[in-house]
Amino acid sequence: MKVSTCPVCQNSFEGRKNKKYCSTFCKTSHNNEVFQKKNEALKEIIGEVKKNRLVLKKIFEIFQSTPIPIDLLRATNINMKYFTSVSKEGYYMFGEYQFRPSNDNKYYSILKK
Ligand SMILES: [Zn+2]
Image (cartoon, rainbow, N blue to C red; front, side, top):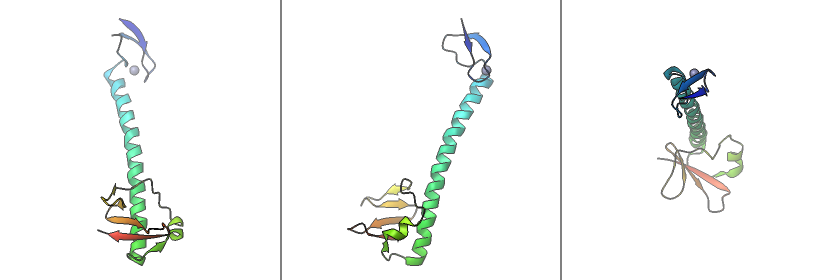
């Protein structure tokens, strides 16, 4: 038996050498906190993808698939770090919207699946 300090409630307890928490309650509290933090990070990413999709949707509603200048896109709050997938041609997908650069990267087209 070894005396340890519980990282959740700071109480001392005796137990196996590898026992981390004083009780099931503290162990569950810790696991819930870890899960909640992971969940918050995921929710934040999903929120960014949704925001990007909404920006592309609004641009598509105005311009359809007409090429638009990169400066117009820079003026939006699109964060290219967050997308749903990459098509087999290598274009970024934001839900049903596909983001296609021109060969010179000065214009972009948005296509809807
Ligand atoms: Zn505890």
